[in-house]
Image 1 (cartoon, one colour):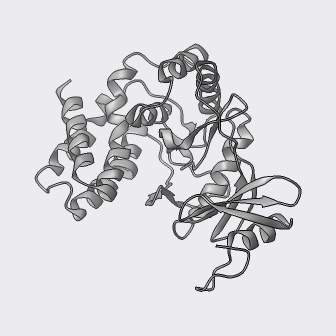
Image 2 (cartoon, rainbow, N blue to C red):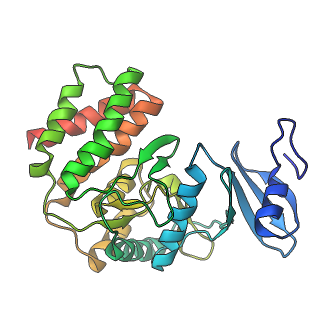
Image 3 (tube, rainbow, N blue to C red):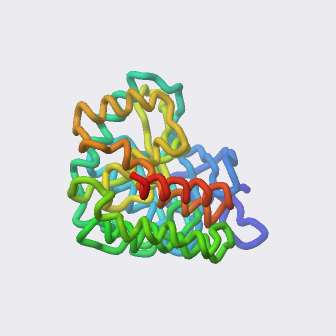
Length: 293
C-alpha cells in the first residue's frame, strides 16, 4: 500500500491520512491487513484503519469520542473518519506494570460511573447497527438489563452459532433456559454504565507513558460487570491490581465473581458464531454452571 491508489481503486493509507487530517503524509508501515501506521509531516504518527463493514467506522469513531469525552480512560484521538476509513493517534507501547494496572482500574470505574442513557444506548452520533469485532451488534435501548441482555446480546448470537453449526439445536435449550432465569441470576439492579464493550486484552494497550490506553471499542450502555468479565475471559496483565483499583473506586455488588460467567456468554457466543465449536462448549459450560447455582 502507498499514497497512490491501489489496483482495486481504493486509496492507499498515505492518501487517506492526508485527506482526513489535512496534513501531508509519508512513510507508511503496514500493521495488518486493515491497519497501517503513517507518518505526518508535523512529526506525528497516526493509524489508518479500514472499516469491517457498513457503519463500522461510524460506530468506532463515535465510541472513541464518547469514551474520550468522559475524561476517565485514555483512548486515541480521532483525527478523521469517513464511511470506509478511520484515522487515529498511534499509541507508543510500553510494558505492563502494577502501577498502571491500578490506575486503569480506577479510571475504568470512573468511566462506568459516568453512565449511559439506557442499556443498549449507542454513543452520541453512533449507529444502532454497530459491530463487535467482525460481528454485527445492534444497539437498541432497553429498560431492564436482564431482558435487554437476553434479547439483544445472548439470543441473537445463539441463533448465529446454531446457524453456523457450532451450537447444536438440542444444546440451544440450555442457553434459552439461562435467559429465562436471568432475572434471578443477574444480581442487584445497576444503572446503565458507559462501556468500552469489547474489553479483551488485545484492546488494552500498555503505553510508553505508563498509562493504559483502550482501542477498538464496541461502546454502548450496559452493565459494568460485562467489561470486567471480558477482561477475565482472555486474561489481562496484573488483573488483580486492575480489580483492586476498581473496587477501591467503585465497589462491586456482592457475588460479582459468581456472575462473571453469565456476563461472558455474550462474547463467547460471538466467538462461537465466528470461530468455532470450542467457544460454544465454553458458553454451554458457563450457562450450565450458572443454572446449577
